[in-house]
Image (tube, rainbow, N blue to C red; front, side, top):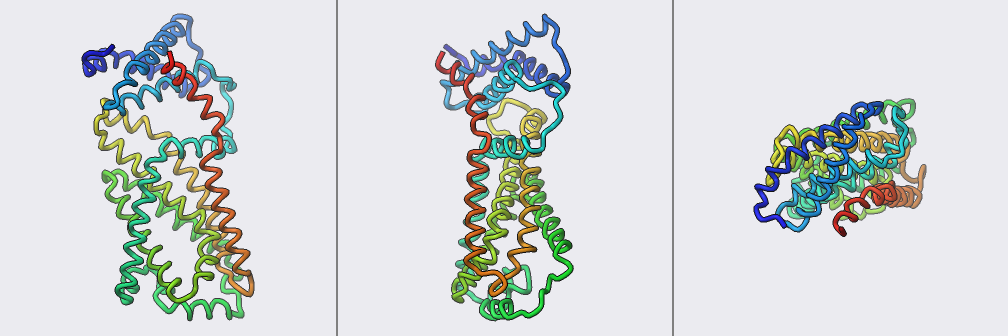
Length: 343
């Protein structure tokens, strides 16, 4: 039984730090072999951290310390019971289909915050446009959105020439660069204690909400869905993941109720932030291709039902990927914590 929690943390922290140094050493150099004495010390530290986790789990007020120990114990468990071959090359397939979605789920709370802020911005943009139609020129960042939706739809559907003929690849590249740069700003703005990330997500939400209200009010819902769903079903979630990574940086920077220092907090989340940024970059490359080769073509070239069906299926597939890919391995990683809690 822990009587003085802060004293307990202070006394046990050197052992936790020692175990973390062991883990950092093994993760940096996978070919490293521990001596017999080091193996004994490592195992003792692992058992000690496991016991500390079980003891501190009863204190609901110390969530940050519990999460820190959970991560530490899980890492140690993976090193002890891993089946990987030392020196094995990085597998891009395994990284994208297992590591990336697992990292996303690990920090899902930050994603929900990003989604909520974007939705609030969307509601604000939609209401602003309904109350004042002239607000469109202030809200919309692109000239082709400031005109009449009905006129734009007619122009798109009656166009006789392919305006992207011969430059689909370059247009797709421009979209990729623009979207990835916006996402990187959302991540980097996390270093402003999250304020910049909040503003960027809120503004993106305003644009989305205003565009949606503008086209729906003009009776062009089918065109709107056919235009946005094919690429937006990947692009918008990717921007939200960027906001998720930005809020992770902000949380580490603020570090409220976290006994570790700033350097340690940043170190703890750096790999996860990199995984999220890499994953969303891959998604945005795909979104850029789809926007250039599919989203920009409307009836009669491409029927709206086909584009809407494709975008909807793609969105469901993305949800399934982020929600379930690699989950079996995730369950295995949680087993040591469950055993400790039960013991």
